Length: 308
Image (cartoon, rainbow, N blue to C red; front, side, top):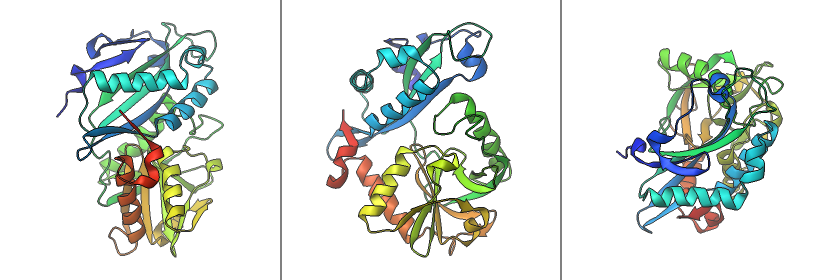
C-alpha cells in the first residue's frame, strides 16, 4: 500500500515533504478544532490509464463558503478556484499517483494563541493524499441509531465541514462500533433522521427515493447531489423531506452516501432487517452507476470529473 507519509504535501503555501508539515502544540486550530475541510477522491481508470478527480470544483465552492462562514480571510483572498485546482493537480502529478486516492484539504486557524475566536487570527491551507479503500463496507452494513443527537445548526452548522464538529461524529461512531455495528445513524433534536455518522442517508419506500432536506441540519453533500441527479436520470422519483425514525424500520431499502462511503447499502438498523435483509435493486443500480461515473466511464457524467 502507498505510504502517504512518504509523499509531498501542500502546507502554508508551498509543497513540502510530509514530515515538514508541522504545527505547534499551541496552535489555536489544533487546540479548539478551528478549521474547515473537504475530502475528495481521485479514481484511477486502468483501461484509460488516467486518474480522475471527482467534482473538485464543487468541493472548492463548498470549502469557500465554509471559509467565508469562519471568516478565513487568507483563504478567501489567496485561493481562487483556478489556484485551488492548480494545487490539486500539482499534488497528484508530483506524487505520481496511479491508484485510487483520497485528497484531504483543510483550512485552519494558524496562530499560537489560547483564545478561541474567529477574528484577528491568520489562517492557512494544507492538503495531503491518503490511500483509502472502503470507508465503510459497501456490500451491506448494519447500523444503529445513535444515542447521541446530531449537533444543531445554531450550535455548529453541519453544512460547513468544521473540524471540531467531528467530535460529535466520533461519539456516535464509537458507540456503534463498540456495540458490534458498522455505522451510526443520527437523529436531530426533533427525533428525525438526519445522517450517518459522517454520511448522508437515503431510504426507499414503495419505489420512491427519500432523503432529508437541507434544512434538516445535514451536510449538503456532493455525493448526495450526484445521487439525486443519477436517480432523476434513471426515472426514480425523489423526495427531500423529514424522515421519522420508524421509517428506517419500514423502509424497503436504505443506503448511506459520501466521498468516503461512496454508496453503502444498509441491510439492518437496530437489528431490524431492511427489506429482505439484502442489498436492494435501487441501491444496487445507483451504486453501480456512481462507481462508473467517478472513474470517467459514463459519458453522461464526464462533466463531473477532471482528468489529471
